Image (tube, rainbow, N blue to C red; front, top):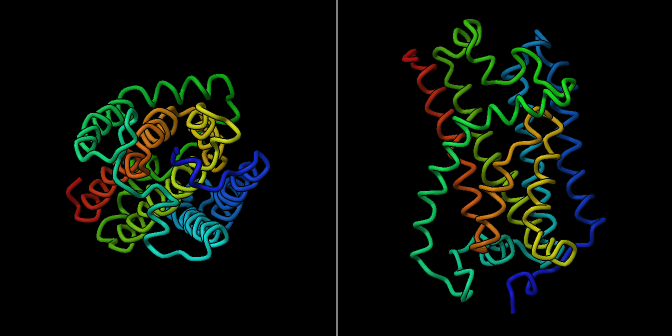
Length: 260
């Protein structure tokens, strides 16, 4: 018996409704709420980070609610089993194997290589096809931090570091990954069969209404969805997704301390 057969399967309508419940609020928060709250709508760096964190927390709450509706409780034992927060299983035998954790190392290296060398090319190709989806100048937090204004606002601002840490936790673990890889992926098999991980990666890309310049990113497909499905463990997507957050966490720490 496969792990998918032990988990309630969603219909296509249910999958799309959950996708919309995650994507639409993030789009509204990113494009409407953040600029409205920012003193300079063209540079809504920290305000944008704060309101998008609210959207990520909503995804966490939604995942817990859906698990409760499905199983009647949200005990840790239930969450582990139903969100694939478990040790990896062999794709051939289906048995748990501690040796499979070693795959995390090449996964992290390949993910980092993609982000540093190829991600930019993919994003530029995407926005060359659809110029209206390009990132507005100074819009994203990373772009804002590269400006003298952004660096000056970060110096000594421990609250900014705390905000980013909170956002990172819900982005790469409790929010996006828990919802897309933990909740949705194991429940998409009935609709998409062996291609469920591809459908999951595509939905994850399209979910980024709040930053459409990154919709074509292959990270969610190749480095988050595929290893999660292959080893039946959400930890692979969570760890791979968290690499970038850890990098930015140390970068912002350096800015706060005035070392960068």
